[in-house]
Every structure is written in C-alpha cells, then in structure tokens.
Length: 305
Image (cartoon, rainbow, N blue to C red; front, side, top):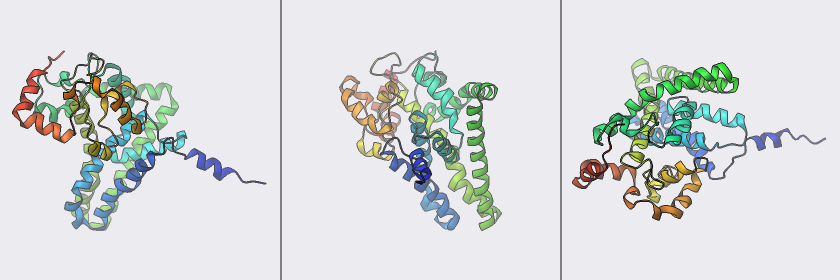
C-alpha cells in the first residue's frame, strides 16, 4: 500500500509562482532576523536600524502582493501566511480588502475613493505627504468597521480569518515583549521590543499609505494612461519586488508582481514621461526640495472635491 499523504501535503504547500521563493526568504528569514539579533545582543540595535526600516517597508509590500495574488495554492497555507505577515505589518492584513481592493482599485484616487489624495490637501507639499497616512487611516475606519461587522454577521470564513490574524498579531507581539523582558529586564527588554519589532510594525501601514500618496498625487484619475505614477529603476524595484510599477498594477491587479516589469515596458511610451521617475526616494527629494519640484507641484495641484 502506497502512503500518499506527504505528497498531498507537499501539493498544498506548493507555490503558485516560483518567483515567490524570494518572497518567502524575505518573510521567514529577513523579517525575523532583525528582532532575533536584537534579542540576542541589544547592543546591535543601532546597527540593525537600516534592516528594520527596510523590513518595515517590505512588510507592506509583501502583504499587498499576497492580498492581490496569493502565494500558495492551498487556502490553509495562505491563511497561515497571512497571519504571519500580520505580525510584521502591525495590522491584520484582511484590512486591505474593503479599503484597497473594493474601494481604491475601483475609483483609482478619483471621486469616491476614500483614500483620495485630494481629499486630504488641495495642494501637494511635504507636510501633506507626510501627514496623509494619518488622515487616510481615519478615512478608512468606517469601511473597515463595516467590513468586520458584515463578516461576523454573514461569513464564518471571513470572521475566522479576522480572528486568526488579530490573534497572531496580539499574541506574537506579546510573546516577543515578554521574552525580551525576561532576557534583558524591564527597561532594556521593553526598548528592544519597541525598536526591533513594535515600531517597525507600527510603521508598516504608514509606509504603504505614503507610497500610495506619491503614486497618485498630481495624476489624472480619469486618464486612461496617466492615472498613476511609476518608479521604474530596476535597482529600486528589485528590492521592493517591482512595487514601483503602479499603472499596470491598477489595470491588472490580479497579476503576479513578477509580471509587472514586462507589462510596464510594453506600454511605457503611452504614459507621460514625468510619471515614470526612477526611485521613490529620488522623486521625493526632487519634488519637495528643489525649485523644479515646486513648479511641478504648482502645475498639477488639484482642488479638494
């Protein structure tokens, strides 16, 4: 008699796209590496800050990618992976569904988009960009609360996911905090937890909303080709899993992230050149700290609807 269960188990854990081997390497090795090293030797914390900030940003990128195109074939594996990501993202990742999938992708920063950049400020500025995530969080709360309420009233599967991701987030952080205090005492242990895991997780949603602002501010939501801004540097995109290609993502949100570059290159000439800068950080420096950037902000200022 042939024992087939391990084969079925392997099939359930099979990746949908081979490129997500790197995704899992980042999620299961790089994400916990910073907190683990800090717990092992708190004196390493200052040196770990660049890694912690990078992983904080990538926690949002990987949750966004998984939200649009699941990593595994099996639902159970995807559910467990979602719970794991929630710990590092700092919020249960089901939250992308009502605010991002069902609203932002429908209205694309135009009328009806609860996260529209123009809703926050009539004119683009560095202050508007940096404060947008805080305002956007407030705008998204009613949609998020409604989604949770409906899930518990009508869908046991969605309600279970909400509970699992919330429990993973709370228990994961509590466990790291308690273990850190056990190893290093109350003051040092609490500091290690907050710097290595607490604050990076708290910033995960902030980075994603700031990125959304920069991807859309000053763009024409009604345009067929110019509704989004792309950051097209191959170097930048390798580190952010091609998250810079935003136009094609809006048009084909179910596509895997590894397909974005080819899709973008096929239609890049149809997009206004100024909407294809190199990197997100370079765009911010030019837009908010140079005269050319100031002129561009004045040229594409939009009124609050």
